[in-house]
Image 1: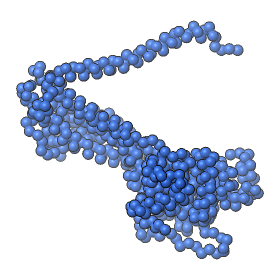
Image 2 (image 1 turned 30 degrees about the vertical axis):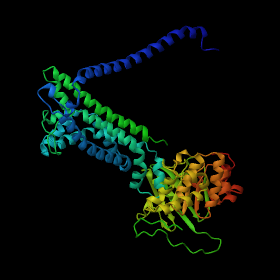
Image 3 (image 1 turned 90 degrees about the horizontal axis):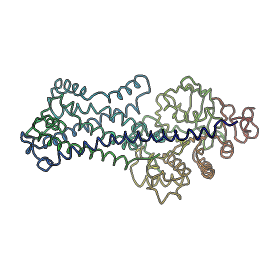
Image 4 (image 1 turned 45 degrees about the vertical axis):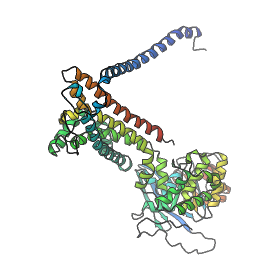
Length: 292
Length: 277
């Protein structure tokens, strides 16, 4: 008894192949749509901004006159911000991940904490801005300083770093830990000599991607209320400052058309910084990836 | 002779004075297990285990999958405690001290009781750094001493000639059998008293298996060895004593030739003759 009728199989062949081709086309269209939008965006920014992008743009302070407007204060401000955010968020995030993965017992409370850290990564950035305004700016009286904004941004990306570091630590095979414990190593020695060296590429990749999110984030800075027109550079972490996305946002909402071009030039600078940071992440991932 | 610096608290005596040998043929007891029970949560994995493991002997543990043989070996260096839901009662005495007593630091025990695992698990480091890992965690920094330990340990594991020219290469470049001997060398570098082996050849090809078996024969001159194996011929070839585990109990524990020629229990005979398991 044959279950497949050869004639019917051949008859259906055509329509099966046709639906195969249709689905392939749908996926190609979806991909092209994303790529095309990106290309249009890039073209618009570069065609508008390139004319204004020169050395003066990088070394001038903000100005009312579009031709004299520069991004120096915002660029330096963003670097100051990163100088706070990077150490605070990476140290806190990696330590938390080590505790959760290596020390914390597997019980309901810790499962609840783990789940909520993942949820925190999805909380809108403006909520973190409000938290920063309440706690750091007002309660701790740090004002609209680099420190206040840096702490706020650190909180914002902390969950992302914790989750990335947890995944990197979890990816280290248990046999490696057992080998270390089996020779009488303490937990700390095992973490420092076995777990972290293997997990560091993953941790750094996740951290850099999180930092590049922080450098482009605007909403928390708007909520904290940092200024946009500054004619001086910050000299310390308690100084007031401005940042790249804030400056771009301010230019983009001005009525004069020329400022749209200035904003586009600012976006090019911001994107260059982001591409640079992401390529470091890719480089680290490719260079230090370990196999087991 | 290289002395490892002890980093543990000074109040802890690492080596109990060895017992006086009462007759020339009697060997010292290394591990004395008395009325030992172990649970994984609700599962009663080891039931009333009583056995003595003697110095400079190879003790093989055989039995079907899930009989508790690996669990028992991992209890001897308290590696079972990595599973959070483990509970134990009874005692395992290592050279006269109960390893489960509150003042026995697990790091101290594992320094004396080394372990070789089922799957070769070298670190993704150079061969040299793999072997030097143990001495380093115990505080040895002197390069010359480390060099000596590395060579001695690799020779001890019969792999020095294979790797002496590429000590700085990643241990992952070696074959499975070589990796396992690197792991044995890494274990020797801590100068343990006992070596636990949890199915050390189950992931290896027959030739590598043979090399590891020969190595075990050499190592028992200096160390006491407990080896878990699925392979009954292996137990018969290399061990002095054999324990047969079934469903968490010791069915029979005796001289290996006795177990394999005239077992006292019907179940042992059924198992070694391949009727189950």
